[in-house]
Amino acid sequence: MQTKKMINIFLFITMFCLIFLIYLWYSDYEFKHNPIPQNIQSQIQKKKIELKSLTYKKYKIRYDVPVIISRKLNNNQFGMTIYKNKNIIILLNKNRFKENSSYMINSVLPHEYAHAVMFLLGDFSKENGSHTKRWQEICINLKGKGCNRFVNNNDIIIEKTNPF
Ligand SMILES: [Zn+2]
Image 1 (cartoon, rainbow, N blue to C red):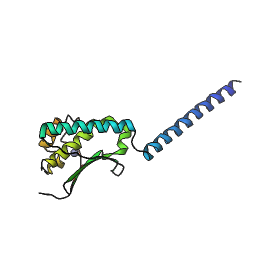
Image 2: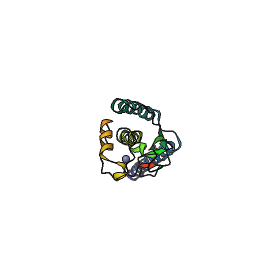
Image 3: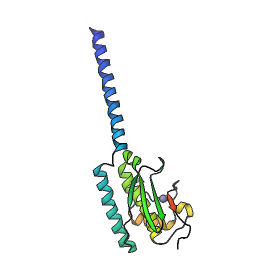
Image 4: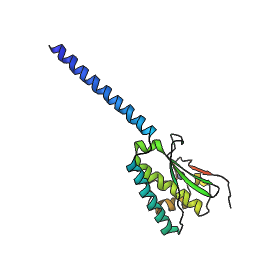
């Protein structure tokens, strides 16, 4: 009788773990194969509007910087700002949203947006991976939470050294 009870408990735990594992696989699969969840998308949209209005307030710049959720960035890259043919786009790494979407929205997005504002101001300095004092000041003005100049970041692509 005792042994049977033990076996039942063992089976229950095994089943529970198996179901949990399947659930994890499924949620991973679902995340990878679907667009980013709607509530996160609207948080990004809200932040974008806030950043755009702060940029106008501080720098009198009206420019709608497209923010694209990308699956093509390296896993160690949170975001990237690209300047090409006088257009600017910000890429955010989709995979990184799974772990911490609030970090992506409140730190990474303003960090990248500050790079975009630098480009819009015609500043293409590459000093310290473009994390200059001016960049930091812009990042802080945009209420960013990731404005550290001395991070090991390589998140800028400029098509030409001097586009003007
Ligand atoms: Zn950066």
